[in-house]
Image (cartoon, rainbow, N blue to C red):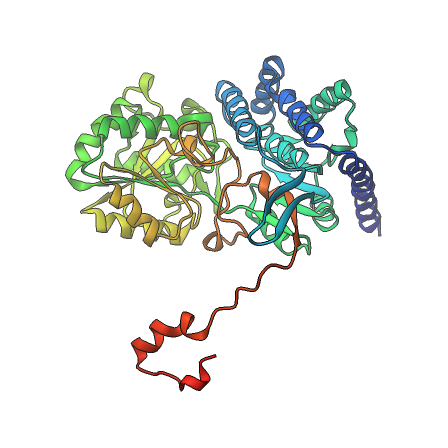
Length: 481
């Protein structure tokens, strides 16, 4: 009975938040203009990007979650938010979007209402800010549900957003956070009662969102693996892999978890990787690291997203030239449930595979995706663009990242054309409803005003003419009308 009472109180708390958010959103939308939506989005962005706050929130994130490092979180918070603002700066999300005289259709942007966002501890400031900006840009309210470790950071972020809202007269109820302590009951209620649920992180939460009865956008698990072929610039590939693997101590779902190198360039590439900070472990040391990292089917929390000295200490191992070491390389041959190192590691460890040729590399990569990470992304370092196209045609992946540092590229970059995002849809392969980077278009409805136009009904032979010739079956002339 006591548990039922607690559950009821938690559900009522969330219901009250959503009711306030709904009232605020109705007013926001009714009085809305593109300028007002844009200003609210900018206020939320500046709440994180203001340098002192960014520094404070980044330090607080590392302190309270134990994940990542402060310098990289500052950079991530700034660049991801700035890139998003670039993407949406001139986007129309209010009023008439387009009119086509040919089709007679006018498209009108409409808010969704109250968005619920479940966000991970790996990016406790950047991910909620991204969702909040997109929601406000489209005239919505939003309620954020952080992971238990991310509560402190998220609460301070929301306070900062409200501070900025006060400067421009925006209702703070447009952006709220499910209060601590976090619980599955509160998150579940949010999923059931909001108008759209966005889930980044826990795959359990993603599955719950899709079964909540609310329209949902969940994103799949990452396990990014890249191929380095014989035509690649090996030094550049090694530098990019190292920069991506070590950024924020591998908290990104797009951080390289596996590297497949072609046998003909293996030794030369490993030399470049060593120069870039990668340390190939001998058989005994690799086994010790694997045993320490994977315990009872779970990742060791003392090794996830930790600085390399802490990672090595937890495994009780050492590496060569430790002063310049940045991450470890664990050689492996297969990818399946019996080889957990072939999956996502969320740590400064990367699995290394050796392929006899490019066809073998594709087979290895397919096996890895079959085990974990289907739909998310793969990478290739090559000077043969046809190989990138081959991966796009044949592998179950929504993104093929070519000659780039994977974690910087997959979520949008200033030097590629993907939308800036911290949530990557994985399509049907990853069990997701979207196959692109989560962006502002997912935060609005579009109403179509449809008018009559001159009829455009084709004759049957215009449609079936070539087919009839191919099959040799031609209907009687009297039937072709």
